[in-house]
Length: 434
Image 1 (cartoon, rainbow, N blue to C red):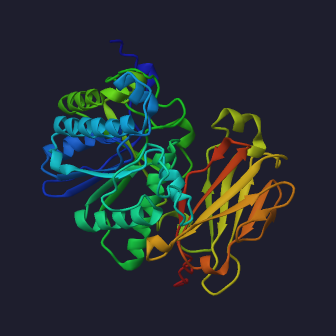
Image 2: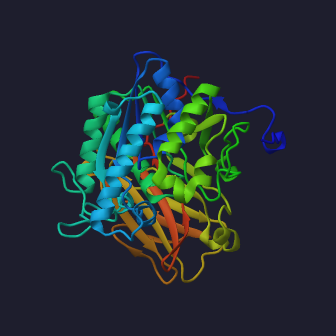
């Protein structure tokens, strides 16, 4: 195999990812069976080899992929076949974990709807999968729970309480797959709610990226190359770290990936793109860093022109969210969406926010639709502000942590989606001691 060192810098500038020690607890949260091997296979193997206690929680069973079911069972799937796909994929995950040095008892399957996590997150408390209606992946077994936003938040809260992880790894908010970014949202809301309640937090929290445009490149097995961040996700408030993989660990990861045969048939080249000499992890929104503590304004930068449609239409490209944090009991909370170009007619601009509460099940997603013909709102006044929009947050959001994001749509086509970001509660700047 060619060793083309021109495809990577000679010396990495990334910090080293932390590794757990003997007796420490690790929890990996995977939206689907295979994400654990793609994003954290090396980490799991290294942690298990060092004597750490590893658990892997699968939010879905990966049964919302009809093409994979058709290729595996050689027939177009009905609901029964999709349920069989879920069983097969759970078995693949268990066998993959064995290659990584982890037993079957480490796998926790929650069984929520594949391709349904984003609808659950955005459901604002209503059930998008009522009784009698199939989820995207077919009818599922929920251990007595209905597939609702509330039950998933409750289960994740319980999971963190039961495992008490020292290290937590979960999907990156900049991931393109709706199940992945929604998984980040659910975990981040629960973590912030637990922080408000004074619950113990993991010593280290990291996110891992799987889907982002044509990344990673090249889509082939290159164990001589490091896995490097997408270019557009540098300089936007995310800190990247890498984990070097030994030859033994890389071989274990390769074997684990090979167990996910239902996926290899369709996306084998994509899988091989993660066989690199490093794994990649990230840290977003660290409370206490930069201007996130003190003062009343937080600026959340977004990648510029990182999609074809955004590059052509500057008005569809959010470049920054400027969040003015309201003090509790006072007016002033607002968000300004800054665009790279003039607002364009016909686009549907959407701003989302969640006020973090100590009970995560009571924290609902609020949405404002910002249109050129006049802003339509679900609970907040808004209006044009230069090349962008300004949304006034309601008093109940003042003085509390927020989760925020924005999207831009043209009909049914998504042109822009910013990663969901945490905005810490307002804290007065420290007084001068001079």
